[in-house]
Length: 490
Ligand code: NAD
Image (tube, rainbow, N blue to C red; front, side, top):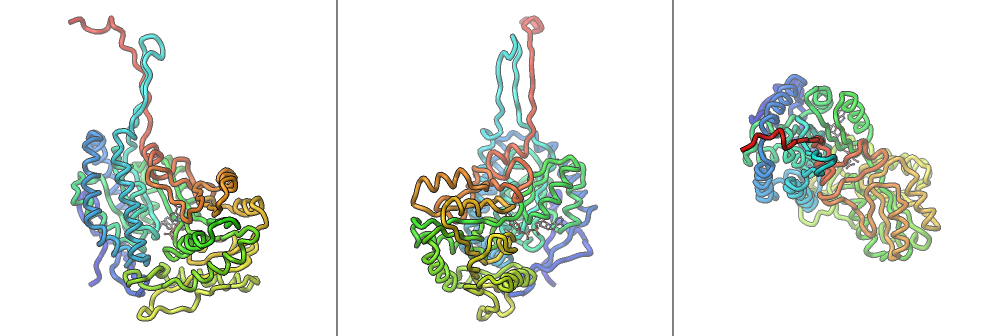
């Protein structure tokens, strides 16, 4: 019988007895490894109520004690990093190196949240009027929830979980139903770290489970990461129900290559950005805009890098890129390439119809390069979420920045140049919240906000760092008067 991935509710591994079960598939092998429950609304309600009861106790635990649980969780995650990385590779497809690197970024968020005794501090003034003092405290909200995508099953839940619990909230994770095994392992470690029951809970499922969280009145805040249409939906429904929401959406990330860039470095970094994680990264470079004479040399070098990338099962030696997540994803990406070709775009490197020896049932799309993509074409605007890089051309940096800003998303934009003034101009004018200068994946460290803009983000406070602490706390302002004459005389 297939392993069943369960929920973790009120300190117990719980079988939601759902009528719906989904297979969890290794995308390199096309083979099912487990099945996951689709938690129904009534069971989600039990989790929320257990979370609320736990929160009432947990918020009274001093923050200096709450951080001790995170110290323990960090140590457990360090000890189990190899095991978790293998699980990520098996259910998500990325290479072992990419999985281990993702876990490092996740653990970094636990380390940052451990700074809560300082991060949660308020501020105050004595004598705002004679004998009257004013203070601002940060207090937790109650039950909080996060809904996360398939592409970083280890890291993205940790963009939220540590900040939510360290500030005194209860937290419920609804991971992607495509990759629930990583969360199941994470929750084994959460159980070992000894968090009080109900403080951190796991409910598996998809839309019905999410809607139950969005509609439950005791859920006070919702964090989401995923595609833009779902981000918009979740933001609307959560806020209509009076909840705080921060919803990170999709992306289409442009990168400018100036003629004065160090071309070898730029090409290597661009290949890693566009084809790393099989392009299934919200910070993947998706459009390369060469300026002037950068065009010929960059085109030649990036094509070489694309064809020489070793694609395969991420636990095999030397593999640099894994499969895409599902057969539907493969069909969708190949369809976008075919449509582009029909619209007259040259497929300079074609990653369709490729096989990996020994893995005939894997969902393979090899690195692909589309040459001379018109700015108004469908492919120039569409998030592909696969290993496909589009090449565009500009004559000046101003034209290139105009192309960068001519899109609805705003997750990331980068430039490769050796000119300080070009870099500075770009930094100032790029219409994106995460900007890289001679960087291919401008992923903010845990102590900076993950700053998507435009259609890549709905909300105001982003995930991670100080924003995370602010999102999960509400400010309380206290104004106090204590006249001397009211005090008992001793
Ligand atoms: P997705 O939007 O399909 O799913 C994300 C989550 O939402 C999953 O947990 C899923 O179960 C749930 N969900 C899906 N449809 C739903 C619906 N109709 N109602 C309620 N819940 C629903 O995204 P995905 O395919 O898992 O992940 C890829 C997407 O995530 C890409 O668009 C990528 O750019 C984006 N992403 C963004 C960031 C960021 O920081 N901005 C980071 C990683 C991924």
